[in-house]
Image 1 (tube, rainbow, N blue to C red):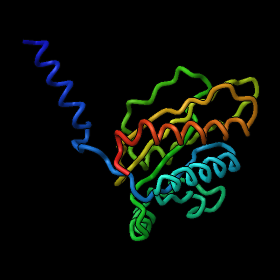
Image 2 (image 1 turned 90 degrees about the vertical axis):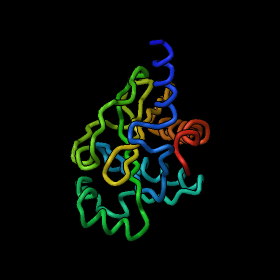
Image 3 (image 1 turned 180 degrees about the horizontal axis):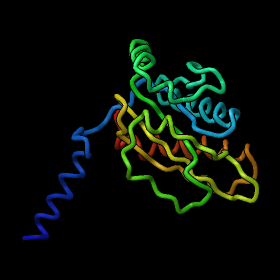
Image 4 (image 1 turned 30 degrees about the horizontal axis):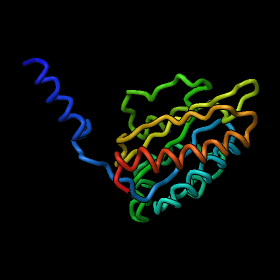
Length: 184
């Protein structure tokens, strides 16, 4: 009897996610890169926006809204949120480096958008003597987290190889895995 109830619970949890939504919908997106260097932020935001556009998702880098060097936590302010909703943007796509190893797993903490944007990130997308980097991607709607994933890029030798692998892995991840979990 315990096995049956456990099996039923797992089945019901697989149908509905924690928020009670059957399949969250990704809409028009603002891409936010959290990196120490502004050129890393620019590169990741532009590449991510291009990839999302290829999947018919209207995406805009946060650098179109903020000036270079401006704190990203401004994006969580009510006035900016209202302005972006009027323009049709309803999703924030936050990218940061989780670490320089392959064993990182996605975080279980459900951080609010204002908290993740106000937290700093001192990582670069490439560091000498490192052969892999793990990117954490978090999707937010209405200021709340609804999806998170890790993209691991291995066999890297320089900054350009990181960007190349990130583009390739993100495209494959969206095409193969995210389409089952997120409505486009």
